[in-house]
Length: 477
Image 1 (cartoon, one colour):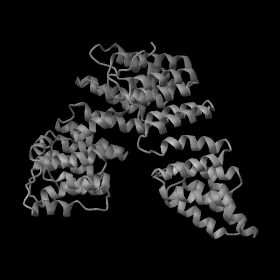
Image 2: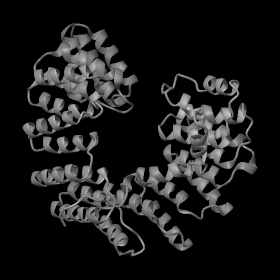
Image 3: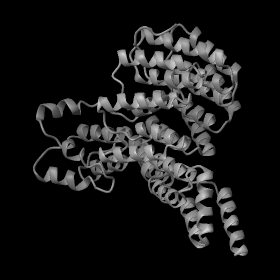
Image 4: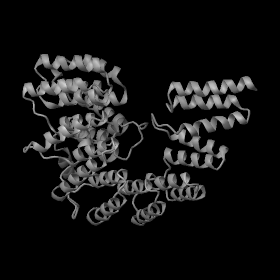
């Protein structure tokens, strides 16, 4: 079924887990409505302070000093909002202030939220210390589930399994969330047999599979390259007349089919995905997924068709432009990417450097370094901030033009912005090390390698190979 109009039922199933967890840590207060009636409230002062280095406590103290009232429900709402913006340190500060300075007594939901925030800010060890010091009367299902979420996020299987057994013994293992957390752990660690055993246990206990249960098993089958398993889960979901499928189900299935070379089967899944868009709620995510997967399937005409419909039916955000440009790159269509980029510029959306980054990478790979540099300069002049990938693209472009000193400087900038576990290409790293070797500066090469190790840019094995290479050069000189 081809798209003729744009509506989509629901969010991507892949994000279902995140949504479920966010709701789990949410509150049901009417704080936002209350503050609307009173005008200014403390959140208007907290909200602009985005830097984690800026403490929330002085702001809260000043608010109270001015004679303003702060309700428990307001603080709970603020914690939830800060958490949703990933301002975990600030949310944790407000949580502690709520009980330590305002003397509101803790409720189980507050403890559960604090455990989650402590894990994100301080790590598992402090979470366990806090949990062990929490009065037993507050250790309700929500608190145990929050701790279980920490263990599964940490991939600490032994601790997670012990806690899950405790929940069974206490009679708390009755809902899907605890089981889904464990399924997610087994999926991430490739323990497929344990996933099947856990789902069998759920069936025996009469615990119904929810959307996330199916999605996580579907994802696991896809990760294992098990086409029959994917078919089985999709068939189960389609046959359940009480369950409304989400478009992400077909997206995962299509992606798996493409990875194992079953293009026709993938196209059939994408056809079903499009059919869902006809009768459901609108979603940019569904269109972005179609653009990506049609590109991977080698269907350029379908990419253009979906893009044209997308423009007619939805306000396209930055991610949409990134999706279509990335797909056209797969076909070597630099001119087409440039045209889409011009459309993006005309929309005057927020300057997200990930959009021009697609074109910058294309230019660098195709020997158009000057155009890439000009685009970087243009973006910066408009207030954009280059991403780590931007500097990596430029480093590669410089290397291809034998401009190694410039490549080294670009890579240094990339390292300064580098998020955990991001890695530039090995070719780029080795070329930069060889540059210093050729300059006779082996000490600087070693320092460079160690700085990369500190930033977790590569494995210890690759580090040792680079350092061994440097030592061999020392012996030769």
